[in-house]
Length: 165
Image (cartoon, rainbow, N blue to C red; front, side, top):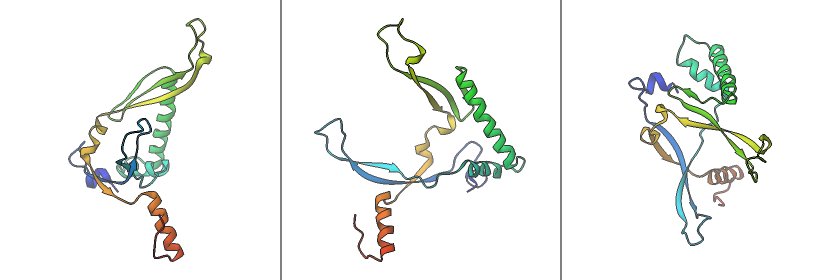
């Protein structure tokens, strides 16, 4: 799908795309008295590989080859890691802001706290303007849950007329 040329109108406006979702019943584990309620979960249509994404980007602009796009994106990742590890927050245009936070084990006092108490460096992402209000830019399509899909496929392969859920 060439989203920019065929579906994007006018510049920086998004067309409406389809998000598949399935529904399920869930009870909050924090409240024993809470009733089960219906929720929705998006269904991933496809996991797009890096090479597929690079091809998709390069298809939007004949000036840059896949190799050029791949090189720029790869270098961007390396430079982003470098800048984050230098303690910088990186404003990445309309994409958003990348920054880090740390997770640590507490110490009894400031004097006893050392860098060894720091256990994890977390990547933070704050979406930019292009990601605002995605709900209004999408349409939703109810599909069977993965469990129902898998049971249906199994029944089809076994020649069964009834699906065991």
